[in-house]
Image (cartoon, rainbow, N blue to C red):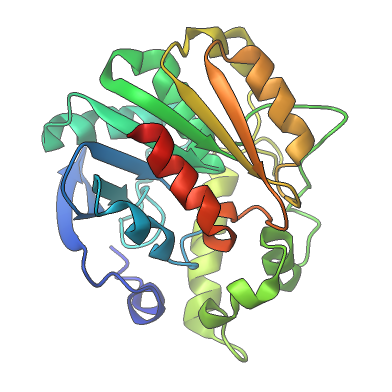
Amino acid sequence: MSNNSFGDARVDHSGFDRHEYLINGCPTVVYSAGDGPPLVFLHGGGTWHGIDFARAWTDRFRVILPYHPGFGQSADNPNIDSLQDYLQHYQELFEVMGLAHFNLVGFSLGGRMAAEFAIQHGQQIDKLVLIAPAGLDVKEHPQPDFMVIAPEEIPYYLVHDIVTLLPFLPNGPDEEFGAMRMREGMSVARISNNGVMTNPKLPNWLHRIRMPTLLLWGSEDRIVPPGQAEHWQRLLPHAQLKMFPAAGHLVLDEAPQARDAVAGFLL
C-alpha cells in the first residue's frame, strides 16, 4: 500500500478522522468529519489539490471522503479495471460502514461514479449532486484527450485562475509528486476509453435517477465543457443546474458560492 507521503505533506487532513477498511482485500482509506446527515463525496481523477473545499460542509453534515482504490492513501487493487468494479467496491464499503441512506456528491470521474451508482442503487441516496460529471459523449462539446496534453499543462486546464493551485504544486522537479500523478493517471487510464471517460450507454439509463439532483459547473471548465450541462439536465428527470462564472473544472476550489450551493441544496 502506498502511504502517499506527498499527499500527507501537502494535503491538510486536520480536523478529519482517518479510517481504514479492508474491502475485498484492498485497504481503503476514508476521512470523515462533522455531524448531521451523511454526505459522501466521490473525488475526481486527481487528489493532490486537497480537501479544503469540504470543510465548508462539516458544520451541517457528516462529511465522508473515501479515496478510490489506486488513488491517494488507498491501496491499489489490480482486480479493478472497470468503472463497474469501482461501483461494487463502493457498494461493499457503504455496507461495511453501515451507510443505508446518504447524500451523494460526485465530481468529474467521481461524478460519473455517483451517477452510475445512483442508477443502480438509487434507493440508498436521498439527494444527488453531480459536479462537472464525466460520462456523456457530447460530440459538439468533447472532453480533451489527456493522452496528448503535456502533464505540466494539466493544472491550467483545471482552474480558471492558477493561483488557486499554487499551494499544491511543487516549485521544481518533485519525484513524489510525479509518482503520485503517474499512479492516479494510470488508475484513470485503466477504466477509460482511450483517455476519455465516457459511457455510450449512460444516456439510456439516466432516467432512473429519480431523486432530487443538482448539477454544478464552472463556466470556464476546460475538462468537461459546460456545454455538456444542458445534455445532463435534459436526461435527468429531477435536475436543476447552477453555473458559476470565472471558475474552471475545480469549481468547488475556486468558487465558495458553489460549496454553499451544495450545502443549501442538501439541507
